[in-house]
Image (cartoon, rainbow, N blue to C red; front, side, top):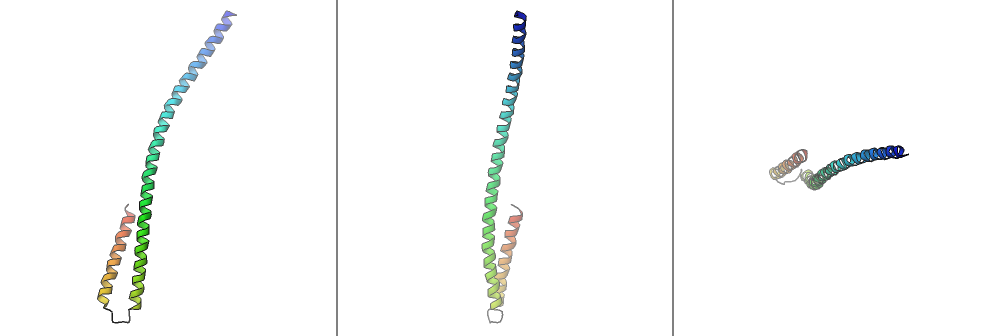
Length: 109
């Protein structure tokens, strides 16, 4: 009877030791996963800011494009008038330069 109880005790002690070892292993894994989560949350915040910045640029480009579109309509409507075409061409070149600059900014965030 005593030897049987002693065997049960040793078996339980062995099982508890195994459980404690797994607990320590899981705690280490938990700490590692928490650090990984924090890193990913920081990366998400950076990417969210980049997205917001890109969206603001897009709105600005759309606004500039609408201005350019209106300017093209003005040039088309004044094609047969005596409006100085040199000034219109210069303004058109300015708009094209600005658009090219905006496109380059979007390509290289």
